[in-house]
Length: 211
Image (tube, rainbow, N blue to C red):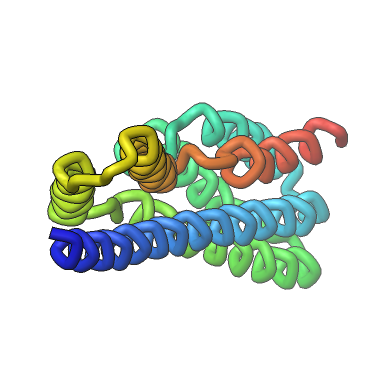
């Protein structure tokens, strides 16, 4: 029985580590994409502010502010389905495409605005794809099955010291629950979401409103 439990615990450890690593990698990629998108939006705003078409800039400013205020209100795992937010971003693209260019400086600035908006769109699309990439149900099932076998096996193993037996089982249950919580929170983008996923958008909003 002890050899069986050793093998099960080894397999469980590898699968749990693999699951957490994949979930953390996805989480980190979304965090980096958020930073890249918001940086591009701020740069675009700075270039657009210097354009001669002040009417278009006013519309751009208002829409950008609405967009950056709305994104933080959406759960990351629901981002794909947020049509209202997607529409706001498409409106930004439409406003930029309709900017009236009056001189050579406007043409140069427009190129910069367009490039930054394209970068923002690309990193935003990356977020959408990553948000849809979840921990597979098979991995969840394997984690649950192996942890259950491990805990039941420990309960059935005859350990002379009853108190030690209770302690070992309790520690194992606590460790398994902690692993599940970490996987769940990474999968649903809950870990440090305020600092990582939302604050950059709020910072863009503050920059826009401060001017």
